[in-house]
Length: 163
Image (cartoon, rainbow, N blue to C red; front, side):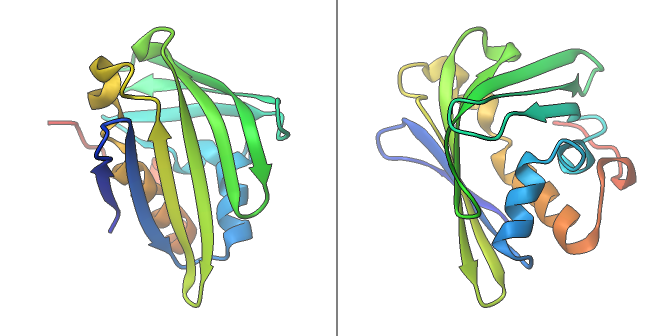
């Protein structure tokens, strides 16, 4: 089960989960255009329909999708750091928060059972109005875990809602 907490300075949300898969496999699922739309989302909540990225420091990435009501969304950014398969850091600008730019850092730590995945979404203290928009990280990590451990995809998940 994924865990999450807000840092003491209220600048970041930190979430983590243990996944029974090698770090390289986890990393690939975070950056591969074919895999991201398979695991990122759930009908009735939100789901990614496209993902593209130029995987290098300074390279751009973009995902588009639909929210739980079928309205389109977009998230864009640049890769800040790419250290395969241990770390990936990007900028993050989501259409639902206007032009607010934040950072997302993925850390993948190999363990005997697979990989400890940590995600840190920072830059929130300067924009406290958007913090609530990012409460979904634990759910997102659980989707990733289900995809890697059981082959579960967006299409195979039961529809849900935020309520």
